[in-house]
Image (cartoon, rainbow, N blue to C red):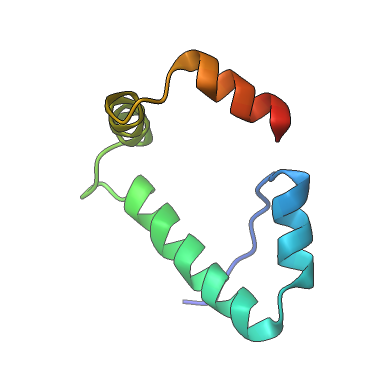
Length: 76
């Protein structure tokens, strides 16, 4: 099946890192992103909501509070 292009908004630092990456690194990142996206949307996998809830639970269990998250996001 031929590859298709999608657009995903990212933060400025991520865009700059992508733009400065060499072709080999970009191909690796494209493959990784494709696999991750497929895992999330595949019917064999949990829904995105389920994944996000699990990530949130793990973050809380590891000490990430809403206040810390707000602070991190403000600095990003």
